[in-house]
Length: 402
Image 1 (cartoon, helix red, strand yellow):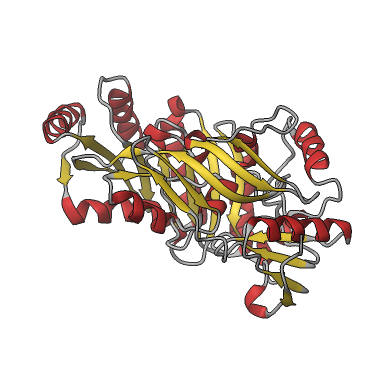
Image 2: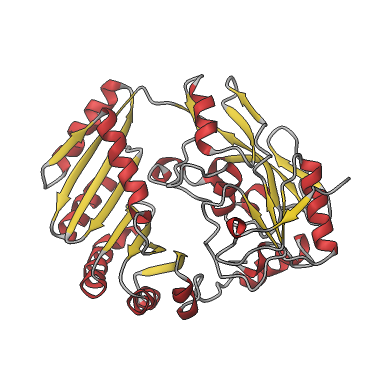
């Protein structure tokens, strides 16, 4: 096998401001595996790159010897519409995949705030949006994966060809691993039919506790929303419910949901409905502020709204969007670095919040806080896996979280 041809890195290839020495763009899976094998042999710190939409996530690397791009691994896209599964190269974009699936009335129910997000990057970061409420994250929809490893092997797991490595479920292992175990060559997913109809309820509140009570009523009802989200923007809270099914079922669920809410709600359909959810997904990423990901116990939504109110009094402009029944959200914090760092520490010290990670941060903020926070109780196990799959420790250039 011959490794992909190299070129000198440039400012446009920078990883969090660090210009790589070289860039490789393999054209097929064998070239990708050979490139990683050569990098491991020469102990070159390596970053895997799809379209680069999340290249600033993680710790700032001290040096990047090699960026390996999957941009040219974007030709494979197999839609088995009868089986409701699809396989796509890691470099295929989510938008490209769903356009193809829509020809047969199907879709992959994953959302990203980034138009150019690739399948490989989405799986590697376990990126998701509001429909996570019903369908879960990419990890839950993934049924097969092909990986290129640093020893030059191509391994497959799940899907139509099963070849497990050391008994591990590779799909779940690489989901959210940030490219620290291997490069995603292709991924196979289970699909869903595109719903016949949809409608969204959008309700505004000026009291977080009232919103939390309404959310609890919905959560304990027989309603089955596709998405169930909250947004805090300044002093205003919003509760957003998406229902998608047959026209009759959508109408009945909307009527039932409106009766449960203590505040008037607007019913949104058509293009304006799409705008509502685009706003929900992208609002945390607008502007240039720090973006923080965090989790909470779903039953503690009232405490979370109180915490968000308190935080906004200190930090000024914040926007928070989250999944009500999952207990996961993103918050954008504007202001200076000192304010942002203090807010991160406030969240990490709160008894109501966990798994606080700073996804988008300026170089100055990264000097003040560790973007991933304290090591988890599973750090030893994940480090052992890292050593097994990447014994030379070249992948992800120390950017974390593994």
